[in-house]
Image 1 (cartoon, helix red, strand yellow):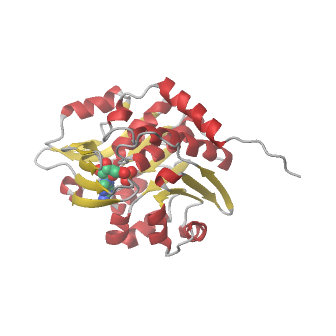
Image 2 (cartoon, helix red, strand yellow):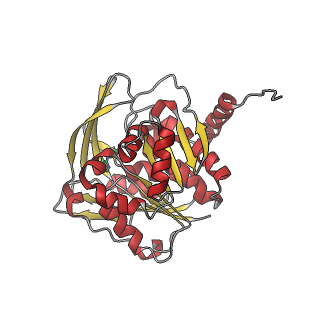
Image 3 (cartoon, protein in one colour):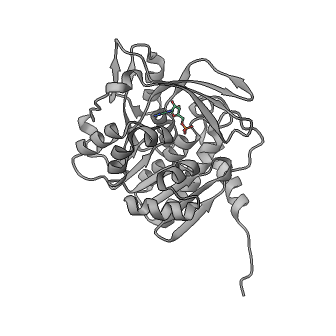
Length: 308
Ligand code: AMP
């Protein structure tokens, strides 16, 4: 089993969907990734920063899930990163209302000594300079580096982002971001262009329409499970990424064939995330629930056909 280091935001989110509204609740890319990856029994740790307003109970929750939170710096005099978003009626698109970087504005990440030899590195959505600094602190190149990012960083820090993208193996982004990054409408062309920027593997997330995995000409598609109830899509992308890398870190196999399974595990976990607000559904998700839904995934995608 591999050792997994996760870098990303640990945040407060205020979310509005057609079904309701929350005050500040626990969120952040690293939070969702960590919770999702925790289902694979790998040794994992988070590098992030929070302010003095961040409750100890959330840090305890990481600890209880066997996620090493010693790399989460607490800046007592600062405020935790805050994001607020409002979803449109289709739940596939949202407007960002507020992004308060707060303690993130001048964050210098420090990778704990025991994670400098990590086998898997998940660069969650965060300032690309922070992502780069973490790569530079790792002693030997990890078996796999996965990066997730979003339009906010493309709009504000594209040059640095492109330097990080050059150094990684897998990028996970959503369809609109893939189009923005590549300047191509067709996702096949977008993936081709993104390959040329560095990553051998490109995962394009399409929300309720599933995810595509590209690897230099090869392509795999996984649908999202059609759900009766979708409440809040926040964190689904990060939960997907956590399941994807968690499975790979557990199996230590980074072949294209195994990545297909990792995409299914990621999609499976993301399908739970959207059923309740914030991290609520992920916090006490059971093994049985995950296994049962994997069966549904299998049934959904398997068919027999005669080829002449
Ligand atoms: P997702 O729905 O997968 O895009 O992830 C939503 C999470 O990303 C929320 O919990 C936010 O706290 C976090 N987030 C929002 N904007 C940013 C940003 N600019 N950088 C890093 N994390 C962000």
